[in-house]
Length: 462
Image (tube, rainbow, N blue to C red; front, top):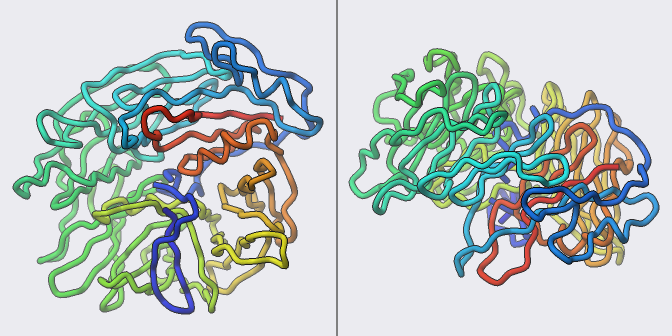
């Protein structure tokens, strides 16, 4: 579900647009996602069969490859990996990372690397299903949480080497101090040498190198951790018994507090859109919005965004326990600009349309708005001074990756996805999306119930 920030009414509400859990925001709201200059124009290649698992570039068994129906100007389908079977009620499958020469997906009790054409390169098998994973690895290594023994839903941790397919350590998560808590609603963020864990009734900071608990800097008396966000830095949000709250940056080598930002009375941090630059939203205990605030490198208020009467809809997913602070996607940040999508609205009979608004983080004022009539746009990442965004598919048209220049204007198409995969693309609404070195990946964060025909990963290039 997407989180709807109604600026004029000052309320948060759930919106049913096919939004998501999303990963990936992101810890850094995708501000730190790597992108390179992009090739232009199609290559003319079609799907290529690969060996090992029966997976092909867009083909499974005797199924016709989407690349076979590729039209001029459309992207090539590098591969389409079907989703495995799932319980009747479906299952969450968090965790997706792009590396040089392969991507890595957590799938239930496995972490699997897929090569450029969908071939399996390696598989790490765990003793339970992955239940939490950060967006950002450290030096190609990522801490994941998975189902522990008995009824503990997320009680074990492991460090996975994403480049070599090795499990470097495996241990129990720090004890859940609240009786019966069982690490419910585990949120996990990683930055530098540290990972922050938060769950219903508890939290911990651990060392990435060995998984052992690190004595992080103290909270104010009577306060508890709400959640962490990682990426380029590690942020910790907290709230207190006296109705005060705040945000702290932790030194990613020692765990000590670098700075503390006290949130204004009656509000607390509800989402962390970016950790560098720091951009957060505030809300009270009744989920009424307190706006969006940008902070400086020293934890001082830099600006409050002037949202006006518009309502905004990043993808923040369902977070029943409020422990996944960095879980919003569909927002992006550069050092001086923050990009946020508005909610959908009618557009002169052309169908539901939204806009992307760019805000100056120095002043909080809106710099520009950009839209495509009849389409929904979601920010993905920033390349130089340009925004990279995803134009979602409609009932008749496939999606696209688009770019918006530093001065706004109508988005320019960088990669037009094929119509042959439109239905599968639309079925991946709850997904991580990464645009890297000219290749666009969409990876599902949730498996549909048993019997559903669903793609799990799709990869496209010009």
